[in-house]
Amino acid sequence: MSSAIAKKYVNALMSSCNDSELAAMFNLLNELVCAFKMEKLNNIILSPDIASKEKVSLVLSLVEQSTAKSENFIKILGENDRLSLIPVIVQELKYQLSLKNNTYEGAIVSNFEISPTQVSTLEANFSQKFNAQIKLHNTVTAYPGIKIQLDDLGVEVSFSLERLKAQMSEHILKAI
Image 1 (cartoon, one colour):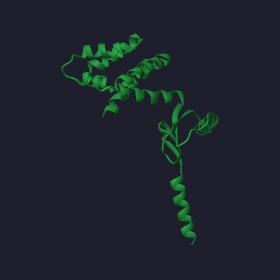
Image 2 (cartoon, helix red, strand yellow):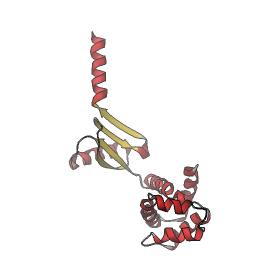
Image 3 (spheres, helix red, strand yellow):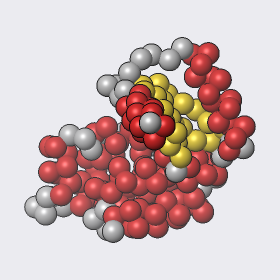
Image 4 (cartoon, helix red, strand yellow):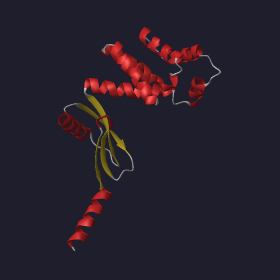
């Protein structure tokens, strides 16, 4: 439900702002997402005892530089009791900007560090495959293999050592 509401606000932003204003709005709202990770701020935003104007002024005080459009946008969110949707709005805005600019971010998940040249080679190959600008970030975890995730495109490519072992065992058993 909240993502449907967030899409409406993002569509309004997309239709009323030019590219530079959208980038500025995204940066401003993205600053606020870090603050919304704090439980105390969420308690204040969700509290029915605090007036919406006070909530709006609190949120605006967390931003270093704001424009008239960004202030009006936050005021509208406050008036409609939607300030808690800012993190969801940022996700949707990021997705819409990716679609508009044909640039996508993804992750390379592995249990080892991948060199910058390998990352750039993967970026170039995926960019060519999807006819888009792809930016990949390396994340080191305990995943036994390598996995490339492009969530906005709905793509996941993985090579798992466990799966390889299982397939080899299955092939050997079939051969016997």
